[in-house]
Length: 196
Image (cartoon, rainbow, N blue to C red):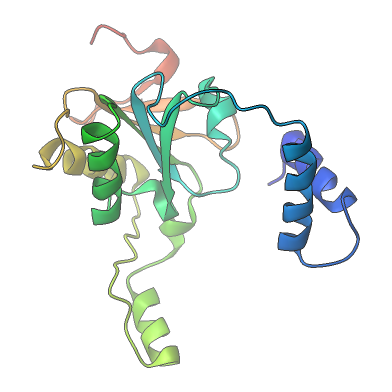
């Protein structure tokens, strides 16, 4: 699925050069970016003191979808947006060294991990002769996977702040967030009671 924003960005990258690899074109695009770049004078501490864990899916423009600006948050992305040991590592550094207090988890509809199983690891093992040490973290129910991710954050002994951990599913066809209640009663994010 392509949006006008992503199509525009791709066109700008493609317009920088007709030669070289896609990475060559990205590096040349950076040259244009850097020519007008001014140091914003920020440090590594997010202004809004929030860390957002989300899927790596190219359809999620998190800053635009959440109204965020440069410097507002830490963004941690991986396949599925699942809370793995490495996500806990990043969140621990984010909280303990860089002052974040809130954690927002963002999964999405039509995720590629819904089409995979742990057999994916076995297929890789058959191909390369070694089974990956990591789990695929595939899932069938996106809501339940968000609940599991919230639980992993809330029960981690390494995190200092687990009282403001909320999970959402981003609809890739509407752009809307739907909040996932840890107990199972889900509501659209824009109608949820912010005091709850």
